[in-house]
Length: 181
Image 1 (cartoon, one colour):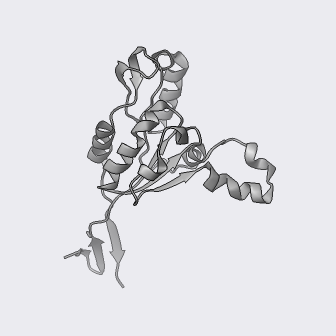
Image 2 (image 1 turned 90 degrees about the horizontal axis):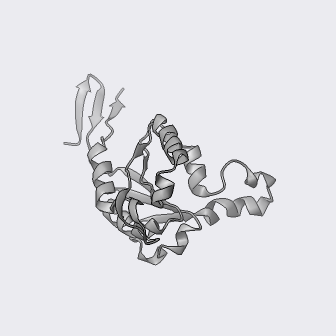
Image 3 (image 1 turned 135 degrees about the horizontal axis):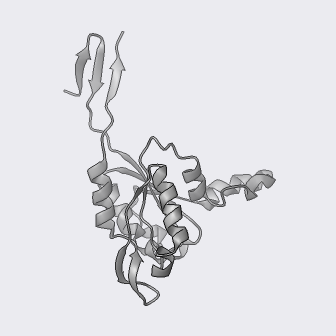
């Protein structure tokens, strides 16, 4: 039975619904793992994806699962070009940063950074990560391994399976209460 009565005239909808997940990638070499992330999450959730223009150099859009819709800057900014609005040079310079800027922080947001070890150890990086942590954004830290630049150290994005496990273990399904009159 999909609904249970909790109060006279009210029910809880317990029907199984897939969580909605937005995966995003920027122009790091770690974007080569994006297709794998999309595939893993799409088996469990309804997935939408966002890629910055620089990320498109690392991903094959045709390799993404067919049930994953990919959005790029072209989807957002082409409408601005049509009307010639000069505001486009404002606070957010791509679709991904616009989404994060408009995010409802009552909903979970995860960041799995990837960068060179020297960048990871930079005090500005720590300050920026502390700031997003204060917003409640969950950080999935990078791992130590041989990086794309040839250096060995911390900075490689966590493996897709670790990112998936972190998100999946913290997922709490919503309970919808339907008022009946």
